[in-house]
Image (tube, rainbow, N blue to C red; front, side, top):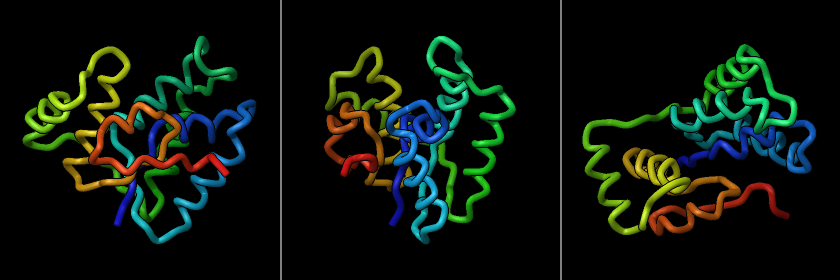
Length: 145
């Protein structure tokens, strides 16, 4: 069994000024120490670097090296798998977006949903409720409770 982690969890874990920082950081530490495989899509990792280093989005932006080191630390975790698009991705993406009207900010969510489905990942940890539109995903918020 495996699960995916969305970019918002990574960002909260890096932003000490966020009220969600402690829980997000604890969740990622749990991911790193547990035996269950957790998946990070290239889309997620590159979005993390983009947002975490962006001064208009991130309160205290990281340097590119800081963000890259965070990505490398996650990738070095024994139970982490980095996943991306494979043959047949576009057809699967079109199938998924045929079921869910997709535009604007939902496009990268559909992209990630398609990558997860292509790799057989059914559970996604995120705070983004839009992922609930993809009925094949079991969407969970690791920061509640």
